Image (cartoon, rainbow, N blue to C red; front, side):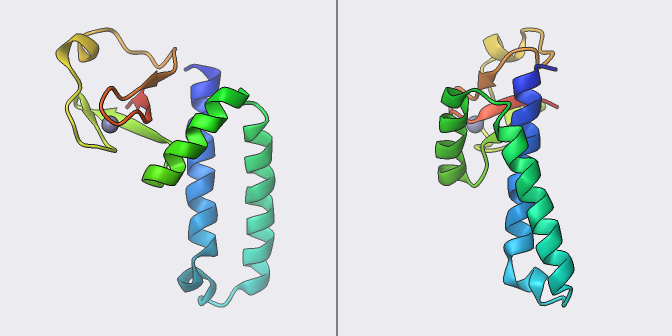
Length: 114
Ligand SMILES: [Zn+2]
């Protein structure tokens, strides 16, 4: 898999984990100290992964994240799991090995082939 695409998927996962941890319902479980430590570790990992992604791609990721709540989406059965629109046959029929950075022709989110 493309290294940048791999980093984007990891960044997306980390961002979702950070949001989950910041959710008050999660904090109510009562492990306040653990939560703080976990959050710091996750944020450190996020900084590290962001440093591996080119500036222009990060900028786009951040815009997508704001708009959709995530910046990367899998394609399953030829359908984008962000906008649920089927990708054109011309795109789907090409070989996909996640070796290049692609975006959904409909919603613009970064995509990978699951
Ligand atoms: Zn889409």
